[in-house]
Image (cartoon, rainbow, N blue to C red; front, side, top):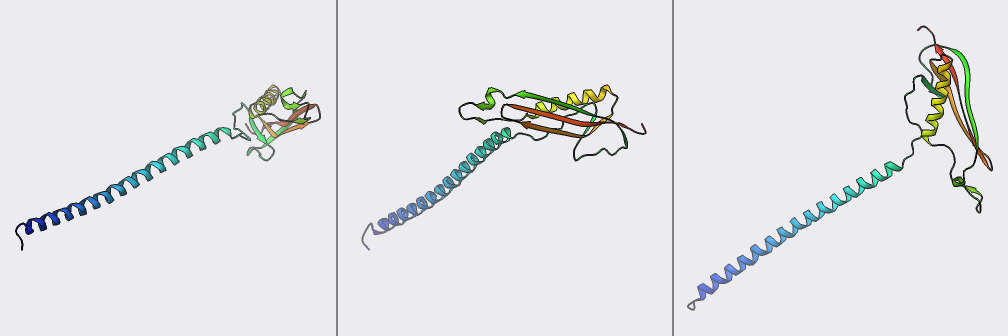
Length: 167
């Protein structure tokens, strides 16, 4: 062997070892980086999904909302468990001209119709007040109807006022 050959060999071995260590750490670093990026992407997706879900949930229009009234209110498909005696049928009805927001004169079509849940609850409260004045304990077979024509809309809410037996 030439003088210094062992040093050259040691240097080559050290250089090779150093390249081996660096290549492994780069692979380790890139795998860690990829995992971090995946976590960031998943986090962003979950935040976006949460925001979209919250936004869409706010757009949902409830069909019915359980509101408490001083009397029991049973709609068409519900019946009280307690026996009762009928008092009389009560009805609230109203007819109004269409509002300008509901129609466009040039297109001659209705853009919005019906009442929202708050208006329906107000009608139910009016029916409950009528039932209270005649001494009823509950309203049974409550039915809501909405109708519309070319230039008017109307509604009617009807229910049977009853008194519970055995109280």
